[in-house]
Amino acid sequence: MPNNPGASCIYLDNHATTPLDPRVFEKIKPFFLHSFGNPASAHHRYGWEAHDAVNQARSVIAEAINAHPTEIIFTSGASEATNLALKGLFLPVPTQSEKHIISSSIEHRATLSSIEALKSCGVSATLLRPVRAGHICSDDLRVALERDPPAAVVSLFLVNHEIGSINNIRALASIIKKSGALFHCDATQALGRVAINCQELDFDMMSFSGHKIYGPKGVGVLYIRKEILHRVCPLIHGGGQEWQKRSGTLNVPGIVGLGEAVRLAVAQMPEEVARIELLRDRLLNNLNQLDNIYINGSMKNRIAGNLNISFGGIDGEELILSICQQVAISTGSACASSNSEKSSVLAELGVIPALRQATLRFGVGRFNTVQEIDRVSEIIITQVKKQRNKTSTSKILKLGRRDTR
Image 1 (cartoon, rainbow, N blue to C red):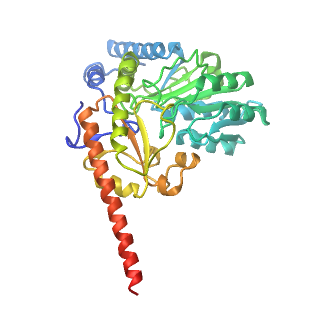
Image 2 (image 1 turned 180 degrees about the vertical axis):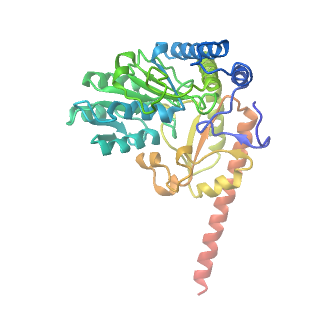
Image 3 (image 1 turned 90 degrees about the horizontal axis):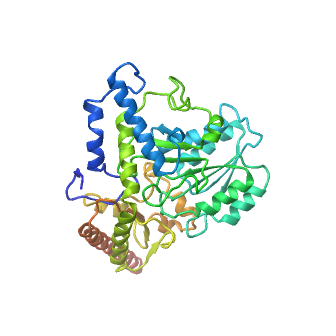
């Protein structure tokens, strides 16, 4: 496993970010130290080497998702890619006759905030509510598409960032295409965990990041189907890189690392998913020693490494503080962890507030071991029991004081 800043702290937050795979690191190193040229420098070998490396990574990524290399736009990450996908269709001013977006209420903040920002440009939105299992119902999408105003684009996740639920994207895409709307998919949590074929799934646009698949941070991709490339307006202007859609000097080490991370993720996906699923199920089986615990989302229809559990009778933040020196884990999405709001995803699923604030999101990943899973289980079970006992004792003492008055 890659070096951990605290050897005794077990990392189980692989939905927030993943450690850099050592194989990816080795691939990147020359482009920091030796092949450091700018891909736009066309008159010497440093520029040629960088240009060739970017093109190689672009081809690897395109092949992995069944796309053409010219349909791959490099960005700083999935958030920028999603912003470009959605805002790029409507800015600087909405030009389509349709000025309506359909999405879901449990999308990543990059999607929801982009939609909110577009409202100032006269764009309206419909946000579909999920079913309790955590996915979007095809019938709900069909009804929304039949209503006025007509939708210009539908943006839906492939895998949810908190509960790991998997949308039936093939069925949803079929409905979207019959309506004539464009389809953007947030695949940030999906690549390397479920099979992605842009042609079979009929994506018009798709976003993902390097740091969710054991690649570097600060690099991502927006896939744009070549037939609609002309409809997307750039958000960043300058030198005209990435077919005039995303100007700026390319992050060559990041792109090279992303290419290698994608190659590894796709090549070893079947074996890796099977191994991680066994670890995840072992974790759940261990935690089932506790009573009053609740799984959020369907166990049947979720990615292998995800486990989102509410522990009744505890305070989630207090639990996190009690184990944070031993276990790296979160109560929800990293993009929302800095504000005081509890998970909007769980709220949309109908989880009561007392359980929303007592929820942990486990992200089991490539470098976790059986020994780590058992150790984490032991730590959490001990701390949950301790917190529940403390709460029970406190209630007894309060009742006792009330009786003596």
